[in-house]
Amino acid sequence: MSTITIARHSARPLTVSRLGYGTMRLTGPEIWGEPADRPQALAILKKAVASGVNFLDTADYYGEDVTNRLIAEALHPYPADLVICTKVGATRRPDKSWVPFNTPENLRTAIDNNLRTLKQEQIQLVHLRLMGHGAVPLDEQLGAMFEMQREGKILHVGLSNVTREELEAGLKIGEIATVENMYSYAQRTTVVLPYGTNPGGEEVLDLCEQHGIPLIPFFSLVHGLPNAGHKLTELARRRGISEAQLNIAWLLHKSPWILPIPGTSSLAHLEENLKAADIELSAEEMAYLG
Image (cartoon, rainbow, N blue to C red; front, side):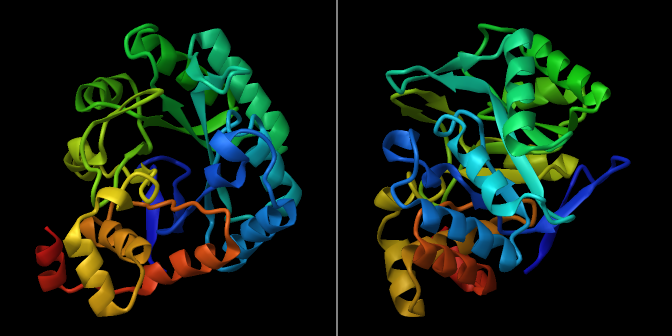
């Protein structure tokens, strides 16, 4: 499996395998509550890491706190090369709605909670997820993140759910290690979902490439495949692979700066997704997909 380096110009860069694992699907329905099959959820985390995955994506508002606790239960004490990336900037209400949690005080509370539930003294990478764009100025949010970085609570700071303009503004405030946006073969630009607007990965990919910033696609399978169209279906059929595998392979071939994190609550699907890292697509096949 190929690798990618996060914060390559910093004093403490992180090199990880180019296929990570997103833990969101390990929760109950509507990304809320405990998993339906807890033993399988723990087995998935152990299998992913044993198979060479050393980048996990989580958030304390998954569950709530469910995925963080599962990671700690399955993997702590953590392997030396394991990078756990979490997100702050949002929270969940009892009605399961998603709301901003992004004042400097909110962000500090969230970081402290992530440190506690993940059993860490420092979080290697934290994405500031932008919600309620403009309600709390970006410089205030990022200022709080960089302050906690100076305190040693955070090693590297990334941005999630950002527009091109927000990324450009963030780059002027401080070092942005990674960007996490919705992105897949079929969903490349902004999409409006019940809980808010999600800028697409295609809108920031060239900026990420210019600055050497890994782009981490989220929801690459959940929102991508239903609208994928006949080309993905046809090529997957010809190659004898699943559409999900082809979607992951397309992301890996689209740019060397993309770090997919496909998630699943099925051990069988995890093994299927991992095999996508070995799929080679020709220039002709990429051109066919478009």
